[in-house]
Length: 354
Image 1 (tube, rainbow, N blue to C red):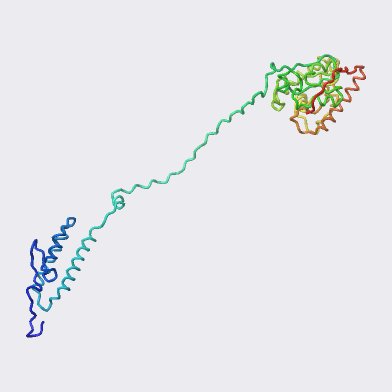
Image 2 (image 1 turned 120 degrees about the vertical axis):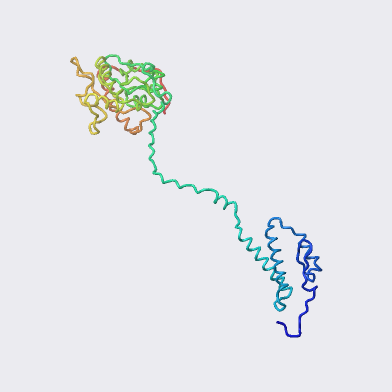
């Protein structure tokens, strides 16, 4: 209530609102006679939210009407009214905005896509791996030659002082036809160092040895291979009776087995088992082991010599020479007893040392 006698005079142009041009409320004092307010309302067109604009205008009309009917004491200043209207308008906009939740692309995908069912856990099954079929090792070139293709021939005339028995021909021996033809083989060197030959011969003199020294040559297996390790036990054992027959037919005084493996094969065939380590020895064997016996002949004594292969490194050269020297001393003595002198070779043979 205002004090008596003082009536606040409301001028028409102070709080007068005109509704012109599309019912826009205008305060003439604060909006330059309504031009500014009309410009703002006319220049702004809300297309995206028409319901929001109409709601705001309706609220403004209601507030203006209420303001005209309020008592004079409750009427606030234009500045306060403007603040209240703007606050209410802003709260209306905020409330309207927050009532519509924003749906993002990821949320829309989550809402529209039904949840996939979780598969039940599976028990792992054991896979059986098939065993690969083992492939046979490739045969190296020139690993072996058929026996019919080896050019080496036996030199076994009757009544030799010494018959040398090798394991089998090597590749070079099978091709050339000369015994122990590979340059790394120590055969010819050991014959000379032991005194079995008076000079160091070359492999091409293979077929001269019987006439020169009464020394012959043969093998327990005829098939040529790169080395003796490529022969199987069956081949070795099968050659024993063949060797026995050769010795029985030609009757040499002594049979020298050039290599431990030959004697092991002979022992297996005769005794039905392998020779034990304590039973083996190089050199002369027991008289009961003589080879080729029969028809009143007591057989030829056996001398086991070392292998002459250059691939065998189980014994030192000096150890090999000692074994061969024992055989050589007997051969020289036996030749002297028989009155057979070694033929003198007129042409000197020079062999390069390896």
